[in-house]
Image (tube, rainbow, N blue to C red; front, side, top):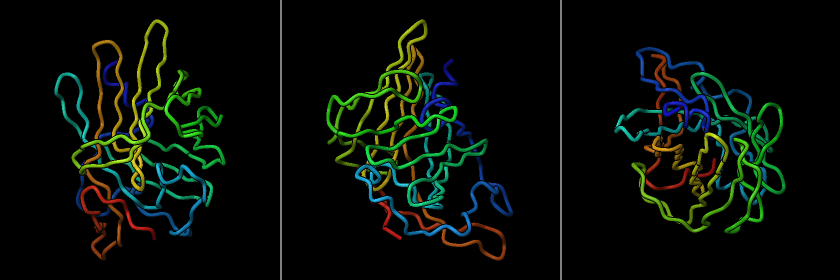
Length: 219
């Protein structure tokens, strides 16, 4: 149960991934034919921006002190939607007028929902009840200090109760994930987020790393 917690949280399917010589994995390659400056115009997009090609590195840790690295790449497919790509798969998201949804078994399920206010609740991605804990949280992660963040908590009861806590920060996206069940705990904290500039002739992807704690500039 311990090792599965984060894998079934918001960034499900993330896996440890190291840099190998030569061309980067295909799932890290920027998409072709997608406008880089598209935006949905919805109120909550700033807390979960899907800027095509943006790559996120997360440091993970469990209650035993074991540390790992997770990588995800954002892909924008249209003004209204996009995806997060991982070494083993992807998840599709849509910007709806009243929130942000993710496809769960083909059914849109809210990740964030309006009104964005403390106490707002909805049925969560994992079958529990999600509620907004804060809309002005401050958080420190390896990527820096962030203010004005939204924190949500999904609680699923039953024989195996689980809690999923997610922190979304404006202009960045998911900055921290925590999943707990009994004595088991998994945490993923943002280490860096960067935009690939180009693929060089040697096949190496070159990145423009964003300054620590600073939101990515609009494209």
